[in-house]
Image (cartoon, rainbow, N blue to C red; front, side, top):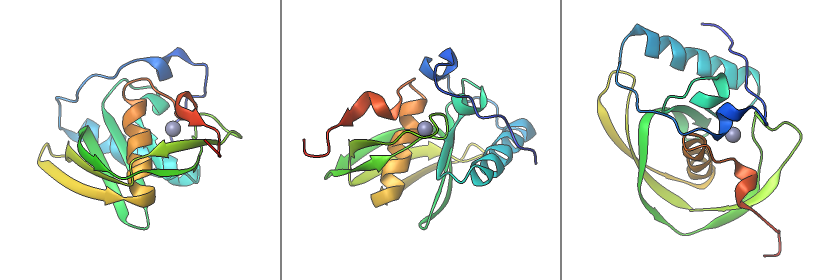
Length: 149
Ligand SMILES: [Zn+2]
């Protein structure tokens, strides 16, 4: 495994829409392993493809609920809302209040191309929504609200 450089805000790659993954070989496994290691080293709970300079629909999320690798993820259902502060490894030093669903259902592929569906809540749901936004070029502060809003 190897650490990858994390792309920082204002780099135009963070504003691009990612393409779907179609190759499920060793290269994808290595990418996911590297992303996991990079996320841990940076003390984050999630990291998405564009943040390591790749316009691919991949993300990793790790919380108390477990470690998840999302390939071509799609949010298929959501319920409730949560309002709270979040930050981003690509936007160091900034946190904003963002409203996210409390619960989400996500359909995705694993590193071998096998389809999976998961239901997530709380911080894990927040992190997954944040990472899936990255795949469409959306940053968390685009959705910032005032704390009393
Ligand atoms: Zn982020």
